[in-house]
Image (cartoon, rainbow, N blue to C red):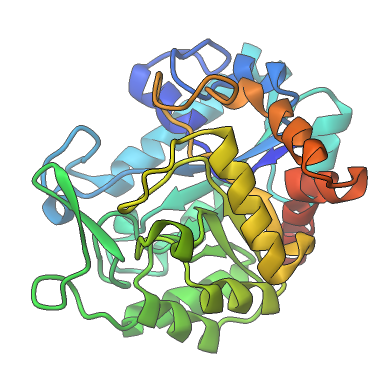
Length: 332
């Protein structure tokens, strides 16, 4: 079983206005997932509020309406031909059933909570539509918390307390965490500024994710977790998804080698049971090196891990078993 803990197939299909089962011309889509033997993908929707992020290629005027439109699109697609190849997974049993029936499972999520407009009650509606994952912030802060890095005027900068929302988790953020606990939604702390990370752990019940990232000491990027954060995630029973993308001043090349190095670093810190793979694939054509250019190359991860001495059971855990365990504990 192969599970991508963070990929943007739904975003890409919606933005291009193409059928879900189409080749989308990016680094992730349904045909590529089938080529790569991918069982499931955690698909976070990305609808950044232009009022918070500033205008850019992906920002929208009404994040909630945009998100609901994406879910409507998915419903339409699943009622047609795509429904023979794709299923929405609300539970771990749904993932297993999709695998047994030859379908790819999509686990619906949200990267950044701009669509909630500061109101945790909106989450109940989205949960009813199948949402099972929330990443509190993305590339800017919002009513719930602050981001570790901020996209501004075409460049990324680190969090600045003089310009950005308060560094701590807001009261609305605490209420959101409580509602996610109650509903059984995965809490993803990727992108969250570090002081708020620790505050979430103080109030959260159950495992957390860092769905896509690296190891800060390898890249010197505040966007990636410190050793202490990685150990804390493992102590919740959670998981860190290794990404093939470098950030910060690191000169490492994006691709398979970096992903495998990240897996090694994570395993050395917390053991194999708390490591997965989160590609963050979207468009990215030509960015990643040959051999891991898109999600169709996921079998290369297994090959690379074997060459580094990992056994079959450990490889299966990293490629999907660990995430499925976490998903089952949170969502059933």
